[in-house]
Image: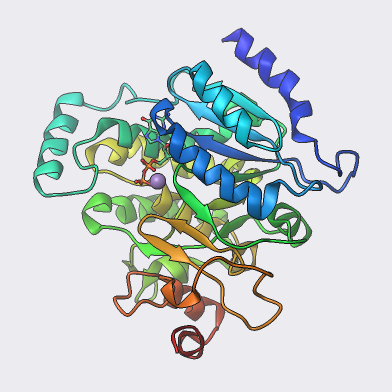
Length: 354
Ligand code: GDP
Ligand code: MN
């Protein structure tokens, strides 16, 4: 693994770029993308809208870090480099960060996958999806290509960005406002995927009360005075975060506890509920930011900003009333967020859907 570390060191220069290369206030930031060779077309489509709306502006040009459990093909690299305005680095996953740890009983796990699959759970029978969720929870931020990086923006294949962000740079915003975690879409998780996640979280909290933030956002993920987990989560396929959040002793300790408990494999814990519960426990609510001004789509949901003037960027190729934000089916968790932040959901709902 030595060569990979050498490659990573050399690559730290890669965090600069664009017109603001020598600007000391420029955040050390990058897009981080876990992706398979088979998803090349979808990733090109994602990158196109990201470049149009944000990254191709000369002062931005943030680099890309692409990660894969398999080596990227030359074709993949060539096609991606043809559609980006900045640089790309490729990383393979480190030993131990992908796949079942030795304390998981494979026979038992496989039995549970069979049952989950039969019950109709999405990705219920998939081992690789579980590897992905564990990696995105506990390992992406430890990859050597991210050493020295302050902020990351997660991108996935086949997502879309709708709004020309003009002068707005989400990385600079995070840095200036000292935000630690940024999101756009929030949803309820399917209960069967996280049956014992809250129980394990309570166990960890009991042992680690000193890690719970004072003005935390636990109200977002719980009902009934924190007794009940409401399954609300920030949809992590979009995520902009200060990596110091994931690197913190508190986050690592929480992840290790969950990893030992085995729910990544015996159930199907997603990285979204885990990032969200962690952010809600460990950050103050003012450190979590709802990027209302970013228009974004990941199948099957989207968020499209609505005026008031000034809040909506110049051009958005989307309709606000098609947003999931205040859907009547209440699959969205923007209601819970509003309640936590003292915002009037009903007034906002009327503005958007009338
Ligand atoms: P969904 O959004 O929950 O339906 O899951 P996705 O299939 O979009 O997976 C989430 C992210 O992980 C995407 O960026 C995928 O490209 C990536 N991903 C999922 N499974 C694998 C895998 O087995 N290998 C690699 N390299 N990437 C994966
Ligand atoms: Mn996806």
